[in-house]
Image (tube, rainbow, N blue to C red; front, side, top):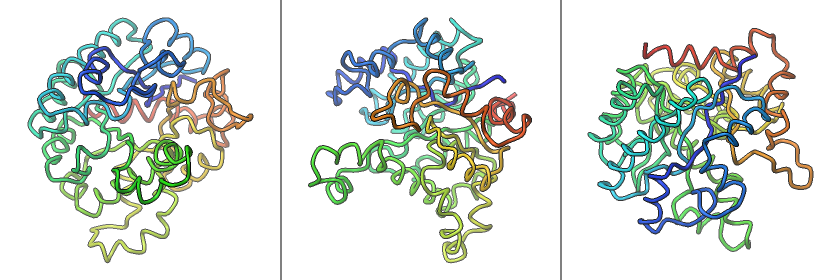
Amino acid sequence: MRIIGVEETVVVPAVHEAYKRAGSPQIPARGFGDSPIARNLRETGERRLAHMDDQGIDVAVLSLSSPGVQDLPEAEAIAVAREANDQLAEIVAAHPDRFQAFAAIPTQSPAAAAAELERAVVELGFPGAMLYGRTGDKLADHPDNDELYATAERLGVPLHFHPQTPVQPVIDAYYSGIGPIGAPLAGAAIGWYYDLGVQYLRMIFSGVFDRFPDLQVIAGHWGEVVLFYLDHTGFFAEAGGLQRPLADYFKQNFWVAGSGTNSPRYLRWTAEVMGTDRMLYSTDYPFTYGFRPGGFPYVDTSKGAARSFLESAPFTDEQKADIAHRNWERLTARAS
């Protein structure tokens, strides 16, 4: 079974240098320091390939670590996105049988964002782009993104969204005053997923998918929370002026992957809601590689766990193959 992971993260030199110039937080998730996460983010050669083999992953679709170039000044973001995509293309060219890449997009500029997506797809051969929710104070449903969404729809390529840290007032209101656990709770523990899940709902209720009915979005982390509340939130579809049931938008415009959270319960629920023909696979490397605090079993893809999780899923071999690679190939064949 050929497994393609669609959320496999890197920090390329162009972005790392831009973060330094911008005074960005010098944290491992942005490639700073000498921790295993930082080293693995910067590494795109033999060690990464060995780790993919250890996971049981055949192909990694590389993307920048959150928030990509979306928190850089506009002019810087435009230049850095282009350079970063050229560097990603070089990484893919060195191992075309093992790597693909999502484009970095300078969403600060509507025109530049659309142009860079087109260049990355047409000239560099990328299968789509990775976005990171809001840009500054503009959320994913902001009209400034319409040109980008129209371009993605026209090119027939998906946009994968990845969360980023909520805005400071949200952090202050919900994640402060509880000690050092506040920062993780605001981020990868739970805050990320609520932040992006609400933006998905905003995209739906603001009419993004009515204006661009063929736009395809990839949601990681088992749908960023909202997937588990569709039966309830869908009650408000008519009040929100939706043209069709809320669940229809997810089944027609969204694809869902687990981002390395190897939870059989989440897997079964996602399949029940979305169907296995709308599911993709991802490991969220390197953030899920080799870490198992206290023996916690669900967020470690090393030692073959990425492959065995899918192999042991309660699906037919055909369904497993769909999730492993055929759905991705079908989705990205739209551009050909």
